Image 1 (tube, rainbow, N blue to C red):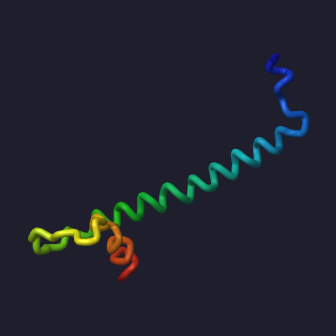
Image 2 (cartoon, rainbow, N blue to C red; image 1 turned 60 degrees about the horizontal axis):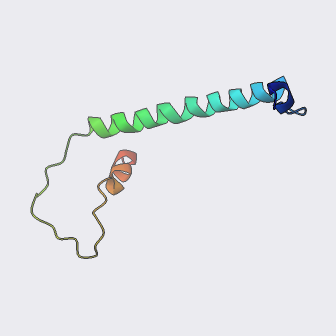
Length: 75
């Protein structure tokens, strides 16, 4: 199959440009939001906690980031 035969006749240059613009807009929102979340986690200094042995009775590991999102959203 030749490259010229594989081109979709219904796809226009404007469709490609709009798709690219949408991807750029989404990534311009997602990456700064993720970086802001990570910076907020880093600025909160580690909390002093008891480091005793905790047994996992249910067979599931403890989820360390479960409270991180809650603590970042609290003022």
